[in-house]
Length: 80
Image 1 (cartoon, rainbow, N blue to C red):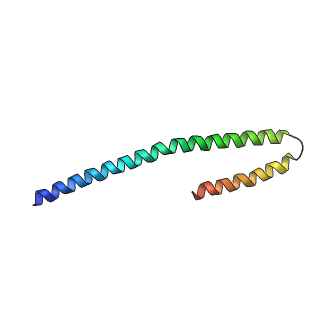
Image 2 (image 1 turned 180 degrees about the vertical axis):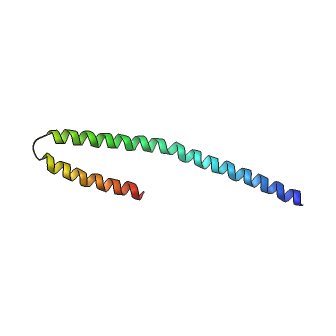
Image 3 (image 1 turned 135 degrees about the horizontal axis):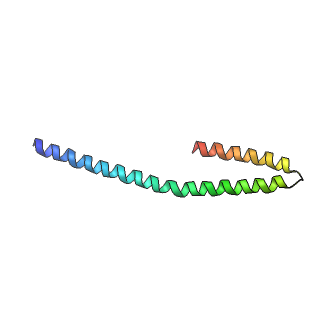
């Protein structure tokens, strides 16, 4: 009976380890597309700021409103 219980624990620990590895691998594969999307959005916002700063009319007001938007996006990103 003791051997059966030990074999049960061995099989359960093996299944738990495989489940953990599968879970971590799934999470790791989902990180890359999110990072790529985040980088693309940041690059787009940076290009928008560069274009708007280059314009002489009301560029400071536009940049200030963009900074408020970026602050909101950062706080939402940190909350997630």
